[in-house]
Image (cartoon, rainbow, N blue to C red):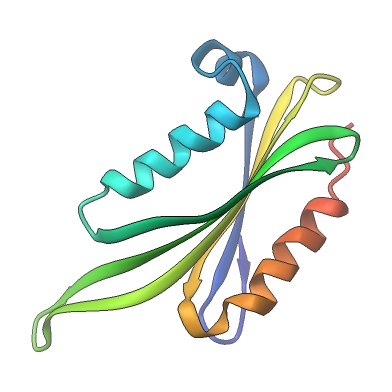
Length: 129
């Protein structure tokens, strides 16, 4: 996890590619499953896919997605509040290392441009094998 001064976070996760391929035939299917989990979470409403692209990451096809959503938080004194967010994710399947990689983050809607560029930059420097 990478922390930023404004409390934003970018996550890098990975796992065995064999397990991912067992559940998802393609990197696009893997990405779609992840987005669906976010869509169905109890604290999200107004989920909308902004863009989906296939990009090249270290010679691998990768799924790059951008979504907008409203995150619902409940505070003891403030009650329910809705905050606009934008989420970026890049899913990569690397056959050479037998691993999958996901770089993702959910950010305040007004600060997302810079974080989207950071996530793309991180993916371009990923050395998976």
